[in-house]
Image 1 (tube, rainbow, N blue to C red):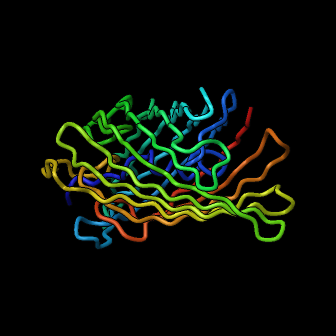
Image 2 (cartoon, rainbow, N blue to C red; image 1 turned 30 degrees about the vertical axis):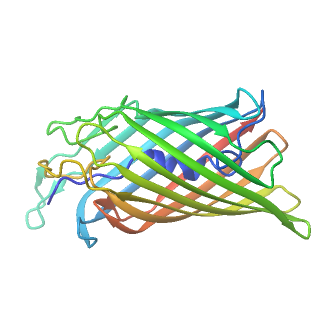
Length: 289
């Protein structure tokens, strides 16, 4: 089995951050959106490099993170994704005949890889179609070689830079507001990691007297496969080189009032290469200023 990883958690963090933030809409000057969330995935199977599904040691990944957006001006917004507590583990490998533990399970905890971004609105506040471009810097703060075999990871150890563009629009059907957003980005990765094309599409509705946001989301990554391909470790971890996936997901956010709310969501890859073949889940509490 080749060295297997899950694609960068930044993509899945979009699941828990973009219902009331993100997309083509910068924050107004002096306004912000802040979210504390938990994201997790537990998997005993993965997509191979040929797109087939194979079993693997049961592996769990957990991220407790802060996501924040703040408007420096009506067009310029600062964005932070900071997983301040990350955990990954592998279960024991047990003999199917004797029940003996062949390889003990392991776990590591610490900071995760962090993203800082600047988003600039190409259209002004109130435009019918909101278009924004975003520069994201991926900071390698997470441990990329934990455990006795060096195969437990909280980060990929490389500094990446992504430039993306989003276009979003909103409309109403009767008394129900809707929105749609499409995004496309190019991610430049260092240390012989392959560069990537990333894309997303979101469709959401504001229901029950504007108390509930319901959203469906399609996200994907296509590897340019222009980096190193050698993989030597014999286990599953996170942050792969040459990974690809197409994921569908959904989220529901409930607003207690104009400032506070909670959200739950899930997403799963329906096609992939070198990525876990199990769903991820998220729960968060958010506020607006």
